[in-house]
Length: 226
Image (cartoon, rainbow, N blue to C red):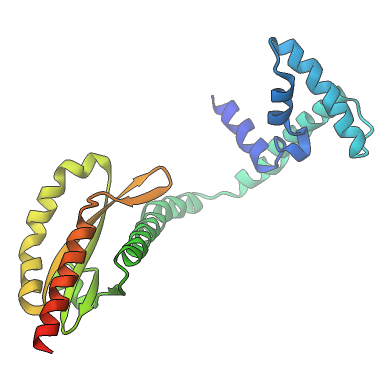
């Protein structure tokens, strides 16, 4: 398995599996529709011969495949080996630290910003980052100003495994959020974001409508007092 991983990693790194190197194999195999692997091998070598000719490479298909294999071997035994020898213990320690601290934090912040952008678009109203003091005192990341009142928002990335714990988060945050509401007049909404593959979405989708209603409530209140 380790050997397979090294071969795969090096092949991808130097693009030896790209269509510029081995031809558009996905396209060709669909054109071939082979019943047996021998059918595909024969078809591929015929297509590869034309491919090499068009690129001005004077090698037979078999010689060319051997050439790619030898090139891969040199990359692994010479280039990667030399790079490995340059890696120090300190490099490894720094990498792991960066992985669990810096990259995790950056990913977390990116997720928050992505959800923040979606919310702003859905609500059609400006959302601003909260002062640091609000984060400490009220657990509020962002806010919406409506007249002289403020609505607080907290974006909390979670995993599907954590979804049963949502009520605990709300309970824990409710005290500080009530303080915010008492001081600034608007409610605080906790938006739980969750990842599905590479995409991030709002888990508690109903929260958007609740926020719209709160904006409308404060707008009416502002009109009455203006």
